Amino acid sequence: FSCGVVIVAAGRGERAGQSAEGPKQYRTIGDRPVIAHTLDTFATWPGKGPIVVVIHPDDEELFASARKRMARQIELTVVHGGATRQLSVLAGLEAIAGSGVGCVMIHDAVRPFLDHALLDRCRAAFERGAQAVLPAVAVADTLKRAKAGGLVEETVPRTDLHAAQTPQCFRLEPILTAHRSVAASGRTDFTDDASIAEWAGIPVVLVEGSADNTKLTLQRDIAMADERLTRRAV
Ligand code: C5P
Image (cartoon, rainbow, N blue to C red; front, side):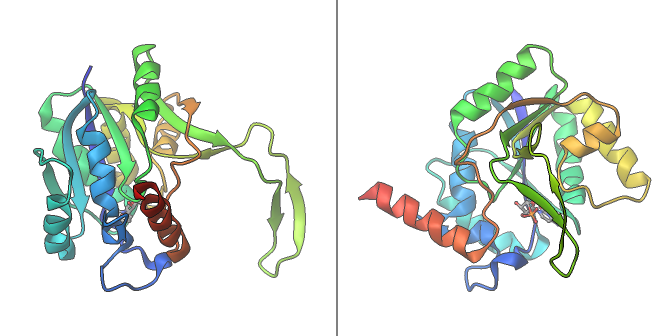
């Protein structure tokens, strides 16, 4: 088993605010850039195939120095992303298409706390024959739908609701075809790849995600991630 990996890191990270270190995937947590942690977890996983990292054209230097902070240097293909996450993933998939792998894992660079057990669960679902695998965690909070002014309209039953994570794993050829078709149809706003599989009628199977595998989105997420790694080191 070996599965290609696309890591999307071309976002601007605007919700995390401005930082001298650049977008959030390059911010330091536990004395190394976020993306170095993310890449290390894939680099040390026995199931990984070729790895493609999708970056913003302005971030060449940031990426080059972040890459040097990986625990060990491995071969990576670097390509430029697009205006939305969806377009960045498509660029990554096109780059991996020639490599001959049958499956691909698509992961957000800003989720540095994935672990090998999670990757193994995705792989196991694949080996049982799934075409698309989505790690997710059951929603714990009670959910409300509200109008823009804050007035609650209804309570959304949380039974059956799951929060989607990455890495999401797919048979390469069907997800690449689906991505190309959706982009050709003019839509570029899908926020994850399982929804593109759903759009194309590809069945998506859930596996247990990980509570640790959160997406660093806001400044406070980065501060908490840094604190967590710094504490672990002492
Ligand atoms: O914006 P969001 O938090 O959903 O981004 C998730 C991941 O997608 C991040 O790792 C970000 O760098 C990446 N992304 C991208 N290209 C974009 C927008 C986001 O690669 N145009």
